[in-house]
Image 1 (cartoon, helix red, strand yellow):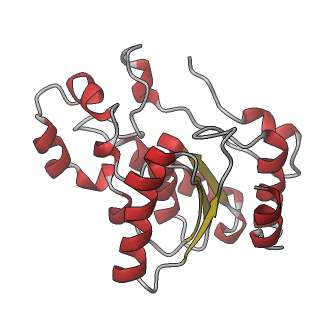
Image 2: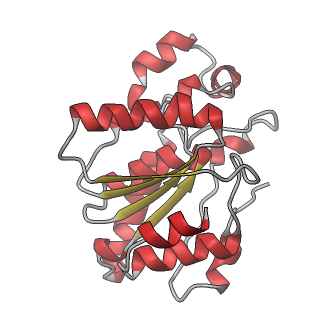
Image 3: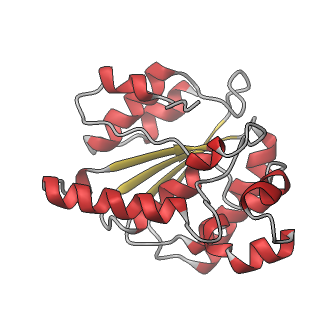
Length: 213
C-alpha cells in the first residue's frame, strides 16, 4: 500500500486522471474498507473533495467535464466529492450505499473510532456512511451486477427504492446487468474504459452495456 486502483486507465483514455487512495487504510493493515470516513476529527472524503474543488477551479476545469469513478467502497466518497462539484457525473459500480451494513464496518470502528460504539458511530456520523445523505446537483450513473447478490439486495435495491419513492427529482440512472464471472469485481478494463468514454462524450451507455452483459 497504497494501491491506486485503475490508475493504469490513464494510458488508455484521452483525459486527465486523478487516482485516490483512502489514507484510513494506512492506519492498520487489518482494515480493508474505510469509505474515506476518516476519524471523528477529520472526514477524509470531505477534506479531499474540498481540495479537488479548489484544484479544478484554479485549473479552469468545468464541472460538467468531470467524471468521478467509484466502485465498492469508493462509491460513498465519490458521491461526497460530487456534492462539491455541481454538474459533474458519478459512475458508481456495485457500491456500498449503506456502509454499516457491510462486514468491514465493525472492524473499522475500533481502529478509526476507538471511543465509539457501533450505534454511536452511525448516529454521530451518518452523513459519512449513507448514500441517501449525499445527494446533490450531480448526475449519478449506478451500475449493479445482479450476480453480486449481497450488494444487489442490501445496497442497490434499498437505494433504488428510496430514490424512486422519496427523491423523484434526483438525477440518477440505474443499470442492472448479470455477469456471473465478475461478481463483485470489475467486468474488465476494456469495457470499463469504453463506458468511461461514452459517459464523458455524452454518447449514452444504455444500448452498448445491455448488449454485452
